[in-house]
Length: 268
Ligand SMILES: [Zn+2]
Ligand SMILES: [Zn+2]
Image 1 (cartoon, rainbow, N blue to C red):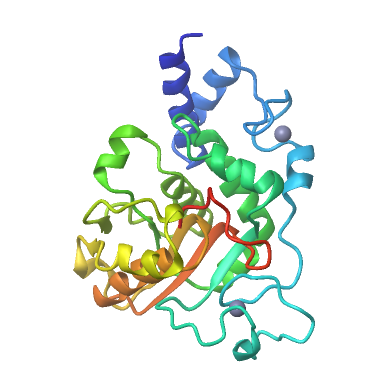
Image 2: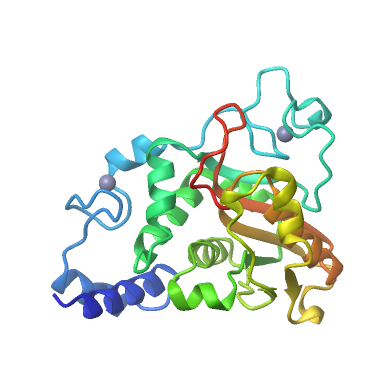
């Protein structure tokens, strides 16, 4: 099959995952049998059992504010004792995540960024919902907003993994997805190449709210694929709150473990 045709069908499949076209799903099954978008094994649509087991189901104690693994001493009402985020001032309330940025989940996050990887990103979003849907629902958000890319980056890679994830979570939560509310106002150097201090300076005032009236008083779920230091999420949440949002919670597929060190491939 020609690569361009395959890519087009991939995009259609992704839209189907967002609930738009069941007919396109059947067409896809005819010309390209379902397979796991991560390992490529035949079977059903979405992540296969092996990949799901390797990625994990998000079980285990974690800090509700930063998403880092938490010991038995930490309760959800005592976040001030979290060693990792104690003293940090963020514009978002907390982080809901599937797992840590390592192993198969790291591989999936990196693969989901590439052009034509919408089905992988959608499958990750669906697995995220399956594992953490109850926690996400309890947040009671009104609107889902993906962390945006600068338009010049969209030219190079048409697919934004955060946008695909936001589409899946918005459909599952049954709340609107504001794809164009938050915008990247200027192009910034890749966060992965910078120190923590330079990350904060790099992203200062880099976001803007496009349609302010739409987010007055709402609780926004800000969605991205990976959270590293929290700088991107903080800057985006701050911009949303300055634009009228009442509260911002964050949902990411993976959090980079503080104890494991900062990955060179993590980007936010
Ligand atoms: Zn698989
Ligand atoms: Zn914490």
